[in-house]
Image (cartoon, rainbow, N blue to C red; front, side):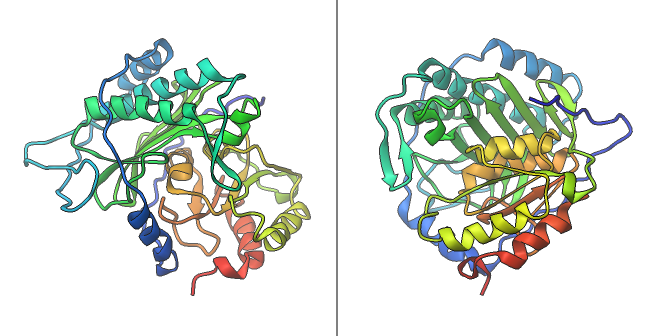
Length: 353
């Protein structure tokens, strides 16, 4: 494992504005809204020791911001209600996210190495009782501290909204978990529409907690991190992942991989999109791309990469947000070179109309 890169003191994060995804992805959003329900869970879990340390470190250095929500009639999950007097400290939101991630990670650690039998949502998309238990523990923390916020979670469902919303992947890397491969994480993000406010990725087995708050930079276990300084594509190490329908589009997806291998020093496929993005933010990977991630896979990692000084777009140059399943993230310096390769060889069925 390479050492976490620390942001130089004179380097300030350069957050970029998010924009809505193009109409090419509206079908995916509509399908999510029509097919995903949600239930509430109650009963907060206590904060763990390492999470408490991280919260203490960040609370001492972070500024306070304010955010408000608005009603969203008809949404089948907790909606935000603004009284006009509601003000929420940005640092407090990060504390909530860290506590929730710690609750989920504890369950993953307790069962790693002897996972329960997996069920399959699709041919290549497993889910276990641990996924569900971790998600319930996370939602319990969110419900206790932010009862009026909306939640979109992988197993319990929901829909992407325009106001304040927590986006949760309780166990990113379920295939790894089922096979006892130690590359799994918890991903929790807070968004206001398409703008990422908070991102937390908890490496459940290494106990590394990657955190970011909009405008406040990115950290790993309380230490500032930044993207790599790699400027030569031939020396770059790039990560990727494959969608769960990779069998259907294997030939077209492999073309992008083939072309990338011709230009970079190394290619990695570790099986947790959230950790791939977190490691890009920490400078371990120089870039990452994936053509088909779910909102909960990349929501927190996008915040981390941007706050660490990197760039996140789709292959065609539009700023990415959780509604867009096509993601290219990088250290910024290599972004156009990576993006152009993915753009040129992107499968036709994924291109905007």
